[in-house]
Amino acid sequence: MGYVEDRSVIIEPRWPADIHDRVPELLRELLALNVQVIMAQGAVVPVVRRAIDPTPVVFGYSGDPVEAGLVNSFGRPGGNFTGA
Image (cartoon, rainbow, N blue to C red; front, side, top):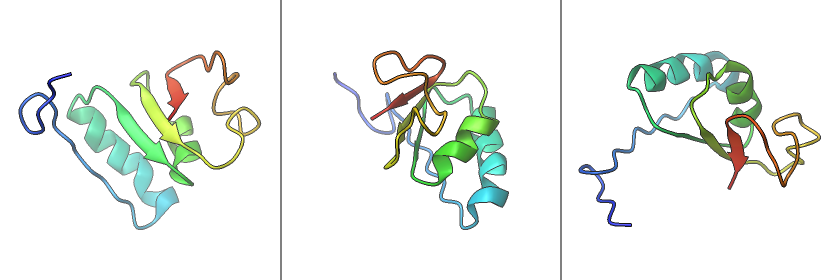
């Protein structure tokens, strides 16, 4: 697609040491940077789901995302969350 890191794509990594306390703060930082998409994985995903605005989120999750309430269905996730 022609994306070049640091030119057409900038990656802003965040790694919380304490998932429940730091994730909302890190999300606020990312949203202040006007990011186009957020990537989340594992135990952070439900926390992101509760705290995020309309910014698109691509997530990796080892459980059933429908059962966990992260998406409406596999075929039509709905909202701004989609699995990778």
